[in-house]
Image (cartoon, rainbow, N blue to C red; front, side, top):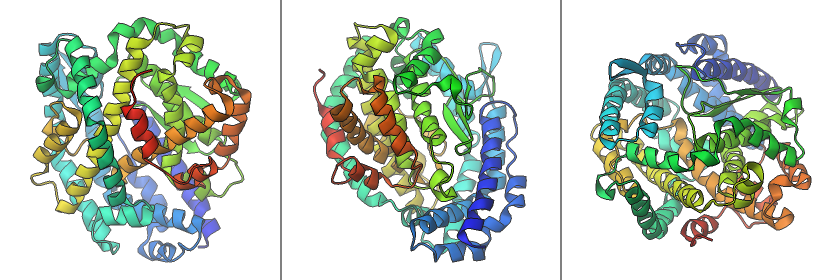
Length: 486
């Protein structure tokens, strides 16, 4: 099977695989059923095929296909337990005040609960339900390590770094700088935010932060009925009429089993792209829909004639940077004024800056923890390390029970961290070329469409170079995170 034929078969697999995850995570079906899809396309991940593709990494397309084959081989080996965990998560409930809340919905209820005691009680019930599936998650982690070794790697971290093309240890050092250089500003800002909600910093939990981050005081600024109009207004300013995009679907319906985490399902790129969110109120709905729109427009504008590897695979740091570029508009005073008619935005902007700083610090700590977890050889004794290391980074009580749930496969946290760096470079370039109102400039839209057309062909470092930067740098991110408010 040559690379072109392999790409054709891989595209059929991904269309079915993504469709299944879409239906499950969008709450359209309870069970996740991927084993049959893997069975139908098992030739893609046969040991001999994977080995041959590992030898084809002399070209960019070959590298991307080799990564797909290796990760697919691991996912193929995990398919049964993956189905089990996702299905049980969808079925799980939390009994709360005489009613059963779907486990996936509990985090939304926590963020909207004003009374701290009740919020903590629901948190404890939620993390207990999370912990109930940790034996399966630990088994899945152990099996992933076995599969990595069967493929000839020391463990998963080495596999991800080698075939994914990301220096995870180098990134760990870069983000350790972020943690060190932003600590003082973060601790001061977090203490002020918690105090304003009557919460002592030393006792506040992640659920308390969810409540504070929810920004109830700014709800009037972000009316739920304006979420979609604000998105369409933004895209129209860039010359994109979303109502005319037949290849892009918005899924906004609130379903009991729908994941609270917004996502973009690129079922067929660029022909069938779906933007999925579960609105729960406040500025987060706006940030979520803009973030996923960054992904969706990227994939919807990818050139259809590009090879499979450049339309679907590559460095996801790039598509995440587009997503951060758009969700960052909720931190742009000009956008808030024009899209929503808001002039007094200081309180919201302070919270938005803290939220971004919290996320970057949290993911920096997650990268370090996940590297330690994979290299520890198993989950034994790692729960407390997770709670301690992330707790130190974010200044909150972090629930140890989340130590295996709070992970994305194949070190995706590294893609987010690289994307935050690239987004700063990208946004500064947009402002330099088109001004602070770049979001309302069709020339900026033309510029983005040119980049989007490349799909995932370029890696983050190459996109940075195309923007006129020397490379992917952490300095700009640190500079913004430590800057005094304007």
